[in-house]
Length: 524
Image (cartoon, rainbow, N blue to C red):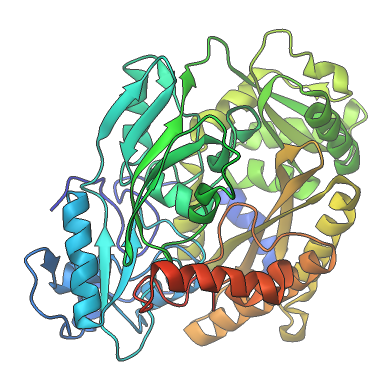
């Protein structure tokens, strides 16, 4: 097996790492939502026994043992957690392959076409919208795990271009660049497990994209193995030679082929970087400050503005009662009421002057604390689930003139979605990425789960449908950074239109004539 980090089979991250829910945080959730019910997970042995006999013809690169197939059956969407935690997984890949070269990938593509097998590219398994899920049906499914395609092939320091195999994980990519004094600067919350190929395939956005850029700005070229043949994407600084095929590969979610190599634009590691915190009286004031930063080119790599509920909830659930008390009492004395909100900024210049934007500087301790715990925060989802609470997120991007009404509509929709059951929802949002013309809205929602997996999933569906309808009504994108996968596919036509979907479908048929690649994802 390839060397990879330890990970829970039915939850987030390394099984040796925990992020316990503090007593104060639990009391806060009980007050907001009611008491959660602790429900035992379905045992691993039971899940393993559910894995059916493989339908694949023998191949030297393909593993068919139940443990490997269970480990690749689901990602981290809320439906995935319901399936794994309750022990109701309804479909599994029939096998998993670990290619180590383009030739091996090509052999797997040819095998899939000969045997009429669906093929799912697999990076870090961190998808939250169903990218890697095998669909039930008569067609066998082969998952292609790129974990062994993980090398730095070349670093052109003069051009500042690095060529990596697509299965390299975030920490290994940054470590290889750091040895030569460089960085990519792409840090999604899934950084510890997600891969370069996955970032490209889903149009990923890192937390510090305000300075380093989204993955489409960093992706300079690469190599795609498709059922119709290999496709090379040369790394050119600019070109007017027709439409840019890189844009077709970006966000293609494995429908066109398997990206085996990616060329990315890197830069020297920063000389100065400081994470600081600022408080604003209310969210609209903070949003206006972030807008000015984005439009005036303030030297910052990240501007993350939480609303008042997120500001309070984060402090409570993170187990920092002293900080929460200071925020409630000290800030009130300074004229910052319950509507106050928190901005975390990563400054890239000592003279950034973000304090001049009108917020109250809160110094570096809060900013530093956020930075050191940012990849640990997802572990809290495990503790919340075990306490009886389900957590999910959704995100969009919209123009500045629509930011406040769109965010308000999303949260209102979430709060009302379970009223018919007499259930409350804890929902809050932050601006996580700012652009000159708009910003992303990232909403988090918590609700009580039940002993019935179908009822828990029905609650999630009601929340997802209501919030998505609200953001689409206000002109938001169906996804700013998580991609489309299964969960958003039915909404894509609103954004792309019928002709747009036909165009994408034609591209899929050209590179994948027999529909081998990841069916059902991106295009329903």
